Image (cartoon, rainbow, N blue to C red):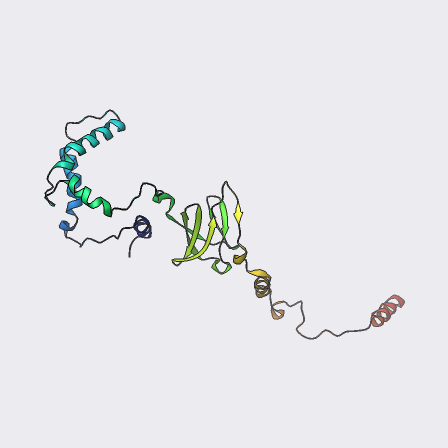
Length: 215
């Protein structure tokens, strides 16, 4: 099973991860070879004033060396290969950072609200005590339980706000049922008789009170 955060990252950017076989270094060597190539061919002997200077030198080296060499595996110049494959690439420049889209795990409170960044949002009443995952997406918050979307809210601005959707409220009937279920039964309350209470006329109590006074 994939790490949930990594799986969400893959889904967000639209790629399918694949596992390397254990003890088969050749299945991941090409990725590591690229790192070694840069370390051995770009870095030695260079001095960088700051990150801007580093970026400029890297771009110049890529344009004049790395992208125009004959690649050892493809036997093509990387720049030529890129021009052929670029039409299949997915544009990501305008897509928000995954950091804002990552899922946040929360437990639903007794008031069926979920806290995120000091604000609170409602989810269905039946999820009290359950775990949900919250995803920021295009100014909205999506709440998932067991990978099922259970609620969606417009993200509140500021702090300490609250947003409750009427469809999440249990309603008067559900609240009353919950209240009755938490009230002790008569057998659990010794001060309440389980039998019927006799109804007497008030004159009976007046007579009793008169006898007590006369004594």
